[in-house]
Image (cartoon, rainbow, N blue to C red; front, side):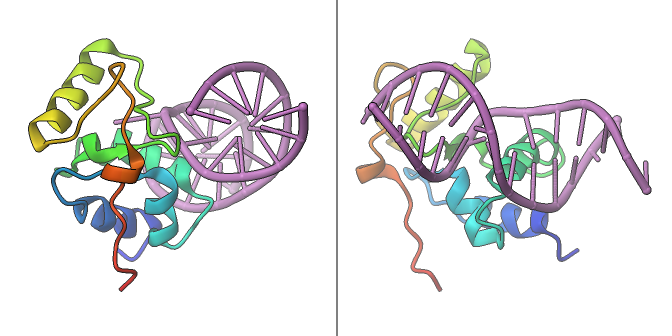
Length: 104
DNA sequence: GGATTGACATCCC
DNA sequence: CGGGATGCCAATC
C-alpha cells in the first residue's frame, strides 16, 4: 500500500520520544506538503487501526489542537512522561521539542 | 463515485 | 505570537 497514508504513518512512527512533529512536516515528508489535513484524518481513522504515537503530533504553532479535555490531558500527560514540557496545558517549545529529521 | 470530513498551514496586520 | 478567513488535498463513508 504505497499511498499517502502509509507514508505518513511511517513518518509518525518515526517520531522519537521527547520530541514532536507538525502536521505540515509529516505531510511534507509523506509526499504532499499541503496534505497536512490528511494527517489529521489519519490520526482519526488510522490511529485506531495502527498503533500511532498521535500524541507526538501537534500543529505549526507548537500547540495541541484538541478540544476534548480528557483526550487533551491524555496527550499532555503522555508528552510530559516523555520529557516534553507543556505550558498553559497546550503550548510546546518547537525550538526545543520539534523533531527535525536528517532529511535522509 | 461523489459529498463529506477534518486535532492544519498560511497570509495579513 | 495570534487570530479570522481561505485554500488545500486525499482518505473515508
